[in-house]
Image 1 (spheres, helix red, strand yellow):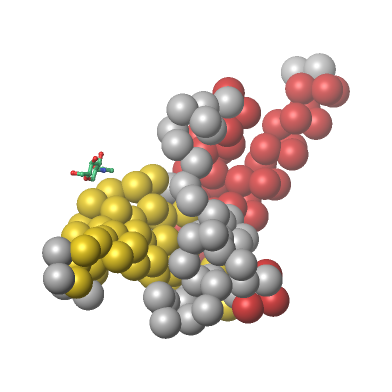
Image 2: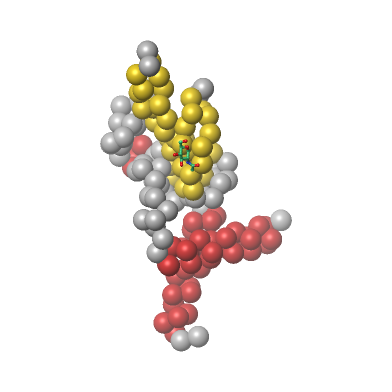
Length: 138
Ligand SMILES: *[C@@H]1O[C@H](CO)[C@@H](O)[C@H](O)[C@H]1NC(C)=O
């Protein structure tokens, strides 16, 4: 491997390590907290350390058949980046999990928007690093 290639591999490995194994900073707030809804306005200093994964959940709560958007940001157990549908607090929500610092601040990037090769590579490397980490760690 050329030294440039090795540098890229090292950087990917290290960022994979960070993505995989360091508890991310996430926002934890609900509808009732000012600035928690979209547009999100809480500063990074309001974030907490989650053990595993950050999530943002968004759904409509109907009040006299008027939909009111309800947003919750929180920590959840380990989950790969991506969105899924579920129910939370008795309403249907779309939840988007992510694993990097402050990532549950903004609306989820659509899969089309983050299709860069480097991102894909990063995910593969993160997964590999997780496997190694888990194998070594127990
Ligand atoms: C969740 O459900 C909505 C509405 O039914 C749908 O448009 C969306 O694609 C679903 N999202 C996922 C990640 O399945």
